Image (cartoon, rainbow, N blue to C red; front, top):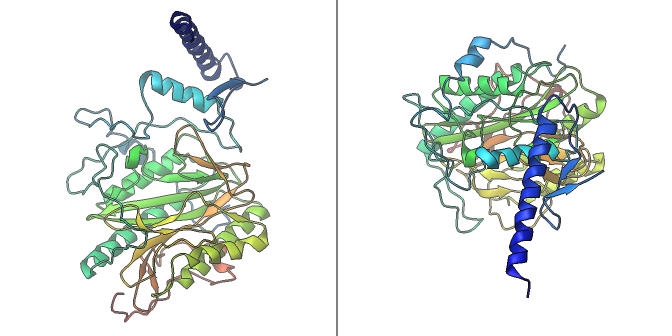
Length: 431
């Protein structure tokens, strides 16, 4: 039996050593005295210790100037203002105090897989404006809805719900187009987030990502090797970047969810190929949607399309049902599978959002517990629509507008040239 006094003394010494090492590393990585990262590296807890020591725009979107007054105006409401509620334990929001310092330590020491690094985040915004309905997680970060008992149990929307879903989808599309026009070299992703936040509020909508399970921003901006859930910060976009902007707006009790890729200035031919193939596999999957077909078959269409090009499809994340609840059934897997995720029927609303990779389709999560990057640091791309199944096809509730930019992948698509507007007839009872 181990002597308890000796064990306690050893444990105390170990704790002090870790604390001193953490403090020194924070100084090294955060001050002007050390121009490069500390050799301290972070590992996952899967079989390893947490810490160890180791020795003009070609995409067709017009550009706009960022207005400092618009950016500043959206910064006035912060989470530390009087009356803001404390996030519940278990939220993935950044912790404060000593726990926050440890999170910073992890972020500084983490072995990043590509060139993108986390920047400094501005304070989290809150929405207190009169007349804007807020989702049930807006204050504490915790959604209150219960998941469906079985994956094949899918809500059928009523005509009134469909009307609200169309309105939310249109707002999301308008906001996404506005965000896309801001993408250009030198713009920070936090500036894009500020624009998204303001544009959502101007349309009477709540930006759905804000405080969802503690997410700190109003949209996701995923650059280059970031698969999804990139957190906007002060990193400036640079020439040659590709970025996915993911927008969800909550209007009158319903969510509209969409995302699109944008090029930052001129991009290389390999990036163009990735964007084109990702878009085409997505549209091929969209065209498959029709009453009576199985949701599981969507994944095979996507994987079969991208594989001959040498690309892979991410398995860690999926599309989802959507409505008054942000994420619900059905689960839309973007790879070949035989999961019993139900059968398509009129009135279903859901997203298809494949994430396609140049290299290995495995994800590594940053210490912020949100940002998912490719394990090999190679680039990835994604597109997303919120869809409504009608009696004879599918309607994109977040479809492009007459004012939306037409990108090169739409003009040069091998599946559908021009803007994809769905397959539903206008006289369909559900449409």
